[in-house]
Amino acid sequence: MIVTNGGLLTFTPATASDSGIYTNFGGLLELSNSANSFSGQIAVTGGTLKTANFPASATNAPIALASCELQYTGATAISSRPFSTTGDAIISVVNSGTNLSLQNVDSPAAISLD
Image (cartoon, rainbow, N blue to C red; front, side):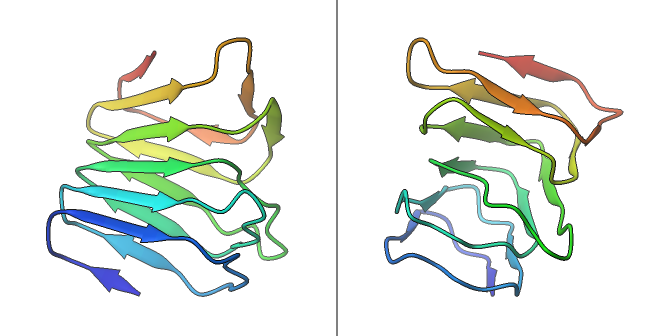
């Protein structure tokens, strides 16, 4: 799926897919179901990606952020999915006392942890 308009795009069903989500729209892309099992590639340029989990990916599909923000709203978690940034990126762990560990990061860009 490719999204190019600004605003809010929310996926609420448990998304069980290995296709990709590619956005260049400057709004909020929210994967809002905590039972989300989406394992495809995610590429976000501008805007914000908000999610409660990063399910494992059988194909090791990457998550790529370009000049945008990741808002993690789930419980303490470890993700081994490939994760990269270009441009400035902000990673926010929203819930107090929650830890998010990204174990496979390739990031030449500046990452700001919030």
